[in-house]
Image 1 (cartoon, rainbow, N blue to C red):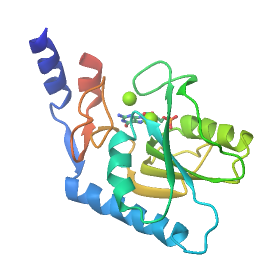
Image 2: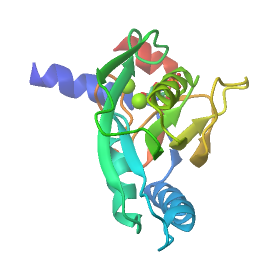
Image 3: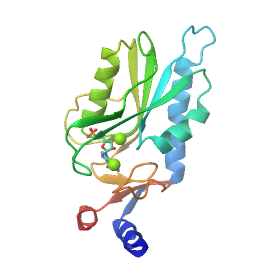
Length: 193
Ligand code: 5GP
Ligand code: MG
Ligand code: MG
């Protein structure tokens, strides 16, 4: 059983291509932190933002970004995923809904990747329905899919090609969230597992 998982995980990385190194990723996260700090780190601010990490994909991004933010903030996580295929996904399913007080606040949503944008469009709408004053979408990777998305990210770390990627929190079948860089997997490799 252990061997099966080991081989399956290894097979996914066969012929994978490293699109961004750990260094590229770190630089991108720091640029995002600088951007957020410039916007929210002012002493006269009365209310501080609520930062929501979208589990599970944003777990590594969140863990890297948060210690670089220099303004007071409240952090919590939400858990939402698209039910269905690994990459194509269908209905948006909520596993952990926003629990903090959202009304009247600036809410900064951290997510791993903006693909077709269905997930974050849904998240943003829910937060606005709960009365958020503004919703800022900070997305580590924005996939260039060649068509208009239902929602745009306000802050982007890396713009990536239209390929399936793993690493820096992003998985294939639960594997390889632990890679420090960003790797593109070949579709054949995804299908065979
Ligand atoms: P969307 O609703 O924007 O199409 O899907 C967003 C979610 O799908 C992401 O938060 C992520 O969980 C997953 N996803 C989309 N593209 C990729 C990808 O290239 N790699 C991985 N690992 N997940 C992806
Ligand atoms: Mg996600
Ligand atoms: Mg996934």
